[in-house]
Image 1 (cartoon, rainbow, N blue to C red):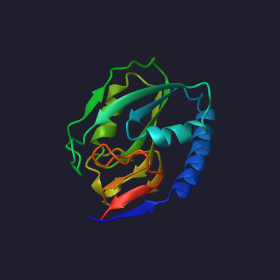
Image 2: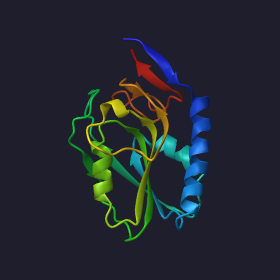
Image 3: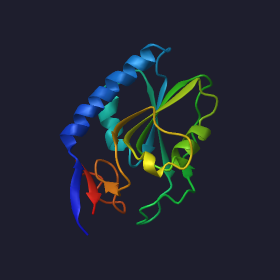
Image 4: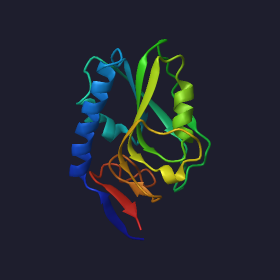
Length: 170
């Protein structure tokens, strides 16, 4: 099994700054950003970089939303979300994801958030060729084909998250 760099760290850094500026402008025009919801563990590295470009007075919540189990390279479709957290009614919420493929995890996260004013999603990676339901990110860093990727927060069986680049298994 071979591995190669799909998206270099420098490209991720540049795109993350651009996304942060776009998102900040968007929320400035609609009442401000109240809360960021970061999905662990995969989105943590992307979120840390992105948060530098967002308003500093925002609440940050962390959740685990898991649809991959063990060394599976495909989503199981069954999504587990924990811990429980509560939002205030009418909050403007930004969900930070690592990757959106089938859409099931993203839908479960959005359904978990009670009475938001607005939920918008940003994802480091978007894999629309795998989408099974009509939901996707409002912004994304990179669109990728149907490949199994890891690095920059995404894992290869719980390892390799700390790699600065997004890698692909060939």
